[in-house]
Image 1 (cartoon, one colour):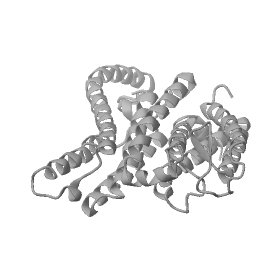
Image 2 (cartoon, chains in turn green, brown):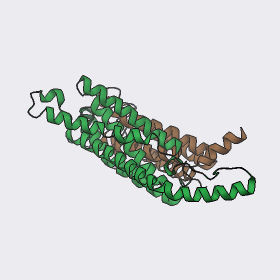
Image 3 (cartoon, helix red, strand yellow):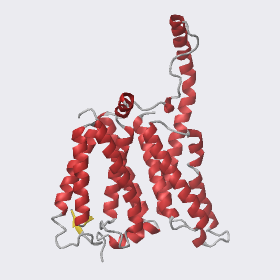
Image 4 (cartoon, one colour):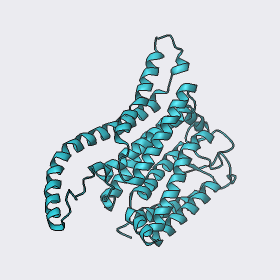
Length: 201
Length: 138
């Protein structure tokens, strides 16, 4: 996986985290706890991926990223005819839709990566075996010595150059363009509007 | 300079923020230093004098670090990116209160979030060899 894809997955996690925290701030108690908890976890994972330069806890994150989407779907269902008051379940549509989009991007990106990396070991194993055999012959040490770390677990070496900077800037604009209106549509964000003079007084 | 993403981004953002800080004073005549309602820069971004000063300081820090070296640029980008990310989030929660001493509006939040992501992204993800070599020599 390239550094650019990893960067965008981290951005998506950061975006989902910020929106979940903002939505959770005004959600009813059990939902607030869940959303803020997931938000903090998403922010932590996004920063950790950027710092470590590799995808972390892929299997766990793949499943966990879909839980907020499921929670949103469940609350929407409960609030539409199953006897639970809408104010007890209702989460804002726009912010949750954007956060869910980010969650799906994270889950989809990781799933694709895992699928590719499961196909890779067969090819890598052949190379490792032959390299290991050659090196053990030369050094007298048995066993494979090539880097058999899964591709996504290797730190990034390609986070350089104009291509990376362009992708970084485009990713930031896309992330902000989606996240800011979503944050503005939360209850917390709507309180911010009266002080923005970009609207009509 | 040309091979370090942190130095490039730090220097470019430094110049832009210095420019924004200077231009901000052109639209904040008569606005209180920490007024919650400021003037509109470029007709979009709301600023007050304190906000302008913050832009000048941040611009100077980014530019100086960017011109100094990759280690300084990486540390400064990461720190300012983290502060902007916090501001982008916390700003929404304080905007309708007297705590909004930077006269933040939604356009400001957009700019702060975009800046946060670029600075934090480049600070955390790029120039990893700088940290490695620093640790190795320590």
